[in-house]
Length: 145
Image 1: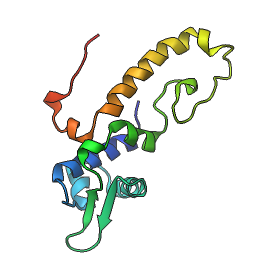
Image 2 (image 1 turned 90 degrees about the horizontal axis):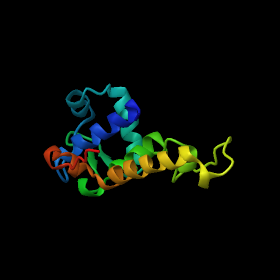
Image 3 (image 1 turned 135 degrees about the vertical axis):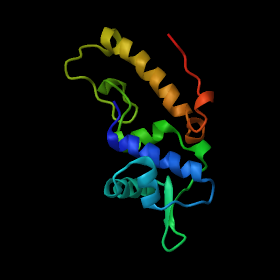
């Protein structure tokens, strides 16, 4: 499961994507609209700012806005920033690979093979779905097994 912090980060970014290019939104506005505690949102937006997803302006016309276009911000990169690796096993992580302590041979590990398929499918969706895509829910492809 993704963390509450990751959900809030994604909701804040979607809110900024809805605002439009070059438009900023105040923290209070985003907090109310998305039901995110204001203090927690401040911390999240600072982290997103340090990572280059958003920028901020002071003053009456200030607030936060996206640095990149919504089409360029993928769910996978936001989740990795906030929650870390997108992998159920350490031996499947792209950014924090570790051999499982009790593993004798990755190539013959039945558990790894099953979860590798899950991980690859999850990554494919998250790394190809942008904020802009998520604004068009009816156009998001969903494949049934």
